[in-house]
Amino acid sequence: MTAPDAFDPRDYQPKPRALEGRVILITGASSGIGRAVALACAAAHANVVLVGRSAKKLDNVHAEISALGAGEASIAQLDLERAVAKDYDQLADALLTRFGRLDGLLHNAAILGTLSTVGDYDVPLFARVMHVNVTAAFALTQVLLPALKQSADARVLFTSSSVGRRGRAYWGAYAVSKFAIEGLSQVLAHELEGTTPISVNTINPGATRTAMRRAAYPSEDLARLATPESITAPYIALLGPVSRGVTGRAFDAQRL
Ligand code: NDP
Image 1 (cartoon, protein in one colour):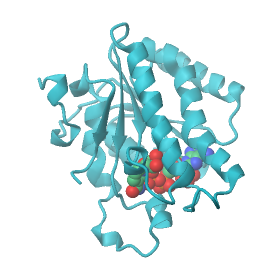
Image 2 (cartoon, helix red, strand yellow):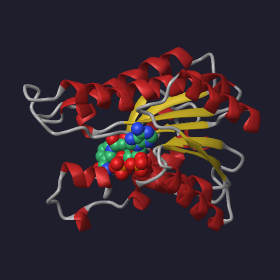
Image 3 (cartoon, helix red, strand yellow):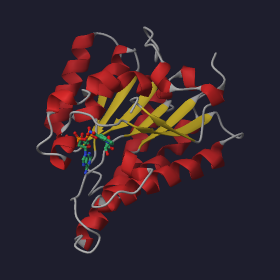
Image 4 (tube, helix red, strand yellow):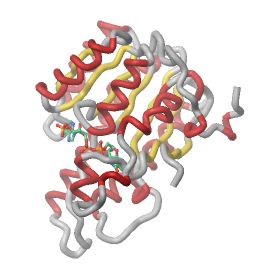
């Protein structure tokens, strides 16, 4: 087993049934990276809880997972922009009733907002981006902590970005939200370290061929970008048993 300090999820070679018996919840599982990671988790025999705002898109991912004939999927429709306390409570109650615990929580859903100078940034849009990207992740983590504490070896994985580690002009609310996610991950990791078997880390997927990337870089050559399917192995490593004891760290899914 790799020592926690030397752990790099990019070195991980996927193993069959790597997530067997694990219950893993993924936000933004309807498209892009979240969909690809959900399929990879199910292929690794996890029970995957798909969270997203579009029932139709979630149904499609559910059908794709059923066709794999490996792990099972269930759907929890939740619009992170509109959800209120009762919606979060219902999700946590349903999860505990069905599975009795949660072994992995991937915070993947996010919105880009707009690219603009701080001087021109629309403040209500800033608040929306912060709400979906940070406040909703905070609330969901909080409500799911009791289920995570029922696991013998749980993971919380937050999704970051290169602009959440070093600020860059025009990235506005999105960059601020990803810095906040890095902070939330560090605070939670510190709170849980030593007293629970819950590891907490962040992953920066790197430039990946999705709708969000297209919105940020409309004229980019898509063929040069990694596909969501090609970057799933580091996610499996950080959601699975191989990352036991690795906590409070910030990782990249791609070699930059
Ligand atoms: P996409 O825009 O392709 O997917 C985002 C996902 O989040 C979708 O499933 C979307 O649902 C969901 N989502 C958005 N708003 C809400 C909401 N209000 N409630 C519930 N779900 C919502 O983005 P990516 O796949 O590219 O991004 C995934 C993660 O990776 C994000 O955290 C992003 O910041 C990060 N990232 C991506 C990079 C890239 O190059 N692609 C680079 C660095 C970081 P729906 O299907 O309904 O739109």
